[in-house]
Image: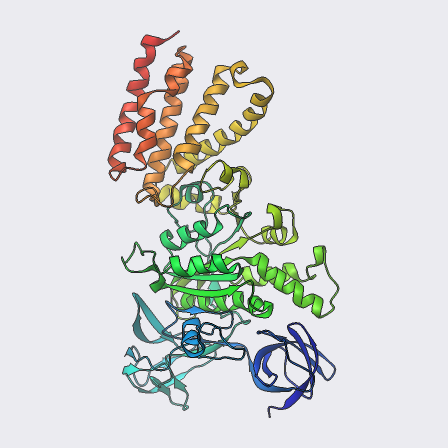
Length: 579
């Protein structure tokens, strides 16, 4: 029986209540306005609650009501294209009901109860079904939404009810009387079960050369994008959302500034999905939780996002989850921890910071689902270290967990080098695992070519230190050639414009062809230098300019093929001007 107690103490978003006996993680309604909160600690007869809304004005003695349920998400048709807050309240619906300024305690269903979905039932009477089995399908935007039996339920199908249904109407009835609907609920803090984990041996191709070639991410992998203000975290995540070969995108704006979140909310619907030609928002779920919103809801928003991602993974889809940013999530944990008077850890963060980050990232992965399908969740977390200091606790604890590190660099941004990902400090632990795929599906020479590019960039970093001491003119011509070839790799290959129609996306074949041309130029240049050809003549060969411009041309593939055939003959003509 659900009881009603009263507020005993208020400390910011943390409220202490007496007179109730909830379980851990149960949702309770606090105060006269019935603000949603979650039980996070129980001390004797007192329940400690984190409230998901502003608690100003709440005073001791106000009622606290139990619900007897943990925080649940509504999962079913209607998620795609929606914009939610951290606890799955649709912001567009709240705005229609409340106006521009939403009052505290306002509620709305996560899924629209009035929309009728054309349901095709895929099972028949007498079939045996279990948790995770697909029992029906409907069209949601441009995606086939597969309606599943909720985990933990099984039985024999007694009746089916196809046709147009709302999310609350019965579509399948089991012999034991259990009614299955298009919508079911799932607790956000409980990972959805899978049959087993699969090796991350398939790449999440993004069309971004520095990511795909130098620091690849596997489907079901985890990555971190740390960077200071203005280094391009949001643009990078938009590129990943638009061009990666994920089927579904879940974008969690966790504690970001209001103007940045507004930019995302206005630009995502305007982006065109290259796969379908429609708006990208049609295969995206946005969760907006800005920095001026209550910190407790910020803490919940990442769990909301990953639960939605797991739901679509269970259908057999590859999901890409963007969390921007986990630093703001950690700050919310810090504030709540201090209100609970817990012993602080490093820089005031709670001692359990690392375990909470681990619990979040571990919900990613490539999995064998309960229904036999395969799906994946690739988690890409942006980190916003204060002052761009990568030694702070959130960045360091994240690096212990994730397998890919894309380090955004303020100095590269100042040099207008975009994406501003530092190739010396970034890394990917999936490179070895993915080598076989690249060799089979792109080119057998892929691994050697990538190694050559990384080596020449590392040599450049070493030589630049020498150049600062003695000057480039005093360096041997072989070392000056290395600097020139590394410059070609940086400016032609690594630099990529997100706003150019052609350069914004580069297929794997194009990436290989472009980098291979640069290596062919480097090999031919080394041979020419050995014949005492002037380094100036080698560096100013007209075909180099053609190679620089080729990545912006619509017939890039043909141009690269032509350039590859002409590099060595044109370099050999430089014999006439040898010194």
